[in-house]
Image (cartoon, rainbow, N blue to C red; front, side, top):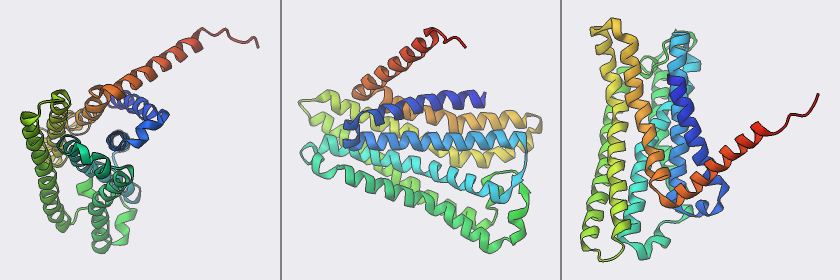
Length: 293
């Protein structure tokens, strides 16, 4: 089931990414650049997490030095998502509240810079986790075998407290950004006499980003609840892990394509056109006469 869900989402994300790169005018719109960055980020995260999920059942324990890059990349992509949501919400806020300044404030170059800042902020926690572990753990630890999990890999207590402090500031910033942009767009919607449709769509988009943020926060809350639940109900250990896997990693990954890929009229037209083209190619290939050997 995990592999089937991964395959379905990978096909969905793959077709959206192909649609973006097939049309150059999407490259010139900061909105779609941020969107495709989120799609690629989610695809990488889902692939890593699904791979770790399957490996944990197939091999149970793997080498620490092999586990480390997987966990660090998974943490990087997990922490990137809320920051991308904040960036996309601010873009919608500027588009609705400052339409005359949008072309100056939201440029492709600035969007690339924002993506770079997001990557730096997202890589900082796992990098510091690694440095603390290198300083505190003996060299033999990296040659041992463990169940590939963040808490078992970066097990020093100072890492836990450091991440709690970071997450408090991190989520507070993202939450306040979404809250501010939502209410500003709401006020603009009340005052606007024209183009109410685009204002309402922007408001609903930011609201959906808030729902996404809540789902993303599950990635930081649910794992800490998983171990006590397994201790209480050891006979349902596999079921608890699978339900947590669905809640934390699968359901939030469905939200990103739906918000822009389906709700955005411009992208939806080209995406559906690409899907129909792919289906037509598959059918044509099936009915082509085979060459004699």
